[in-house]
Length: 433
Image (cartoon, rainbow, N blue to C red; front, side, top):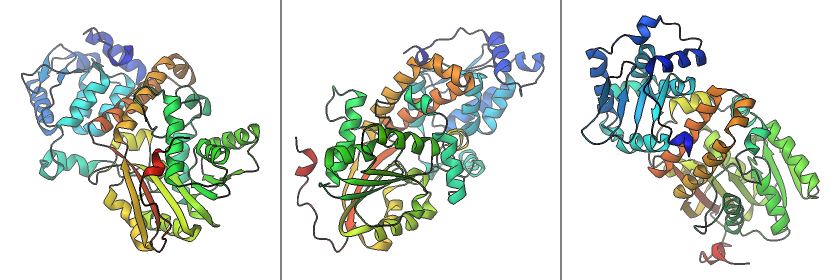
C-alpha cells in the first residue's frame, strides 16, 4: 500500500515549507527551522528513545543528521522537518507526534503500521517507568467526562463527521466494530455478517424475543437480528446522523415495524427485554458510569434473559493515547476485565462466557485502512490534508495496538445469577444453518 510504504526524499527545506503551509501556527524564522541539530537536542532524542524502550527506529533531522536507538537496522525512520517540531515532540510526545504528523511537520519513511508496532512492542513495563515517563503520564490529557451532555458532545465529535465519509471504507452494512473472521478467506463484508451471527448465537435469540440494544451505530445489528432471528428490537443511540440513517434504512427494507431506533442515552433506557446487547459502546461510557450501566441491564433484563457486552479493552489499566483522546475519540476509555466487573458484581450477574477477538480486530482495521487509502482523494475533498493524515495515523496505530496486544477486544456474555436457563456447552456458537 503506497501510503504505508512511502519513502520520502530527504529534502528537508522542502519538507519545512510544506509543513508551514499545512500548519499556519508554525511561524518560526527560516534560520530557526534550518539551523544544525545541536548536541543537546540529539542527546535529548537519545533519552527519549531510552524512555520508549529503545525501539529500532531512527530519527532524521532537518539538516540530515540522524539518531538511532541501537545498531540494529531500523524498521522505519521518523523525519523531523524543523526545530520547533522537535522541541514540541520532546516536551510531550504522546500528543505532539500525532499533531506534527497530521500537520505534515513530521513524516515517516517506511511502513507506518510497522513503525507503530515497533514502538508499542518496545514499551517498558509501566510499573518500572522512569521519571520522564511518569511525568509525561501526569501531564497527559484526562478523558473528557461522560455526563449526559458530555457524552453527546463526545459522540458527535467522532460519529457525526459524515455518513458519506464512513461509507467510503466500512463494509456494505456500515458496521464500525470488530468483524469475526471464521475463515481465513473471509472478506470484510462476510466477516461483519459472521460477527453479527456470532453475537446473536451467544445471545441464543429465538423468534418472538424482545431485544434492547445500547449504542446501535448505523443500525446494522438491530436489522440483522430482526430479519434473521425473528426478534423485535429497540435500539438506542445519541448520534443524530447514525439514528437518521438507521431509521431510513429500516423503512427501506420493510423492518420499521420490528426495529425502533431511539435517539437517547443508554441511561434513559426503560422497559423489559429477553436480550440486552451493547457492541462498541462501553469504550464511551467511562469507568465512573459502569455501575449505572449495570443497573440499566439489571432492571431491563428478564429473569432468564441473556446479555452481551462487546468492547475494546486492555490487559492492565491505562488511559487512551492522549492524542487519540484529544483529536479522535474524546471521552474514550478501554477497560480491563477486572474493571468491567464493576458492571456485573453490584447486581449479582453471572459471567457465562468471555472471548477475546484481538486479532480479529487487527484484521478488521487492516481492511478498513486499505479501503481508506483507496478512497483517499475523496476524503481529501471532503475534509483536508490534515484530516487525511490524522485518520491514517489513527487507523495505523489501532492496527499496531491490537497486533502488539496493547489493545484487546472482549465479548462478555452474562445473565442474572438466579437464572438456570444457561447453556451447558458452547456448541450453539458454532452451529451451521
